[in-house]
Length: 446
Image 1: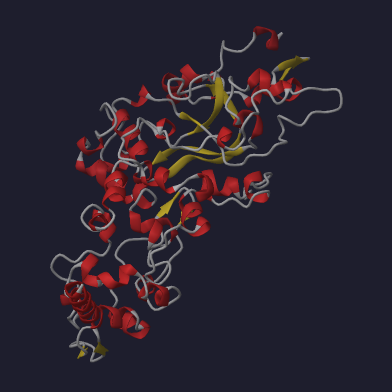
Image 2 (image 1 turned 90 degrees about the horizontal axis):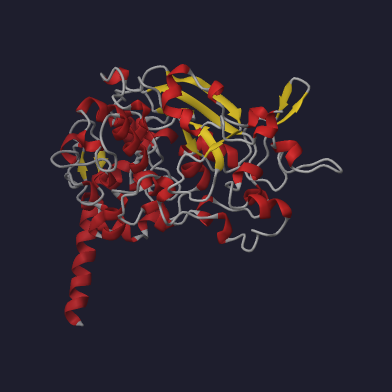
């Protein structure tokens, strides 16, 4: 017992020395400095010693990132710092995660040696010291870009999962500079803002166990997830799970799913920890006539989604999306029948894929572009009980809002479906297989 007490006292002394250090004068600016904490809680000091940015702010599907000055991004003394000082992470000490020299008053020396600005970029070495299972599993998680990396590898001529590291260095560089602005690190959710959110400390230096829905989740999942859920898009209303239940993202998407379980999956819908509608909505398969007929043929979103955002044909670091964002609703043959079994037709969303995605990084065209369709299985987060498909007029039925029928020379409801004629010429070979041509009842067209 005595030994444990002595160890505790010794650890406390080390922590105090680590975080406090010895007061010195900065040998360049003549400002009294008390190591890492004193500098990073002194706003005036940071303004005098900061280094200007050498690269433009991040940008992505949600637009350009908001800009924070370099000194604002590393200032610890704001909201959250008091809470951080009473946390276990504070007790580790700055150098415990960031390395460097935490007793020096000289900026260059303090950030020298093996100093690392973002320790979670090497999560297994830093975060893994205490959070071993989570950090190990995260390496193969979907949040770490595993699914997206797999598709890049397949279109580049490799087999898929795990082959991303075989890509040429310049293509990997392109991914890290562009796609990884969202597919990032532990810190991007729990300590700092995602790069696409401007980067920098989000709440002093406090580690937030549950990420802020708007500041983190929606910042990355913006144009295709968060904006749909919050009803931002023109002509839409917020998802009923938000308005009726007040659900945050983490009410359905829990930590085990977000961190991964160490299993490399073929793609995100193959992950066995994803939430399903019938986790909450039990016993609805036979609740009404429409469910009885369609419950095992369509994914729920075919009837209960509103229109949702699409865009495509992206030049990585070049022109960006050459098919600008547009609202649409497309039903196609199930693109992943081996994973989402039983569904004949599902919603699909146009992807960013194009043969020359990487031309700005020295890859003129994908070598195996046609291996995957340019529309993905989709589960828009904009659910309503009553949508344009489920609202019916007196005496009518849902077929009037969903089935194709001929009125004169016009095929009503045809725009709801993905036909071959909807594809660009460079998409035909990749995507024709999931179009509905020849797969719908012939009587619909007579």
